Length: 85
Image (cartoon, rainbow, N blue to C red; front, side, top):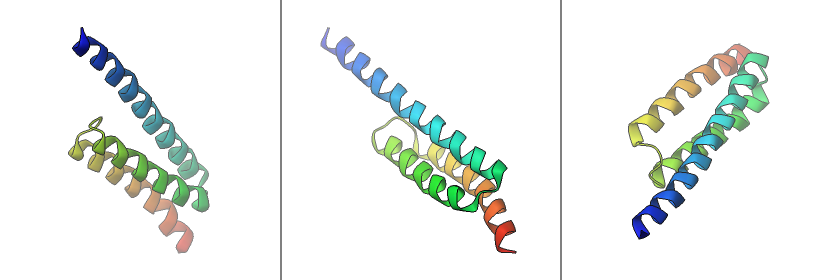
């Protein structure tokens, strides 16, 4: 019984954290398509913070988090470099 309650709590927490990651990822992708350099920087920091937080809570594995951050950083850098040039 106790394990079932614990699993339910964890499931709800994990779903909430995963949802937050998806929301923040969508925000940065929108900023990238709009080529809004300021928002890209802001949302990239937010994505990194959120994903690393999920790793520390055991929601995501370390390699999964690294892959997500790497892919979004790569996209963000295309906008940031284009604006700098």
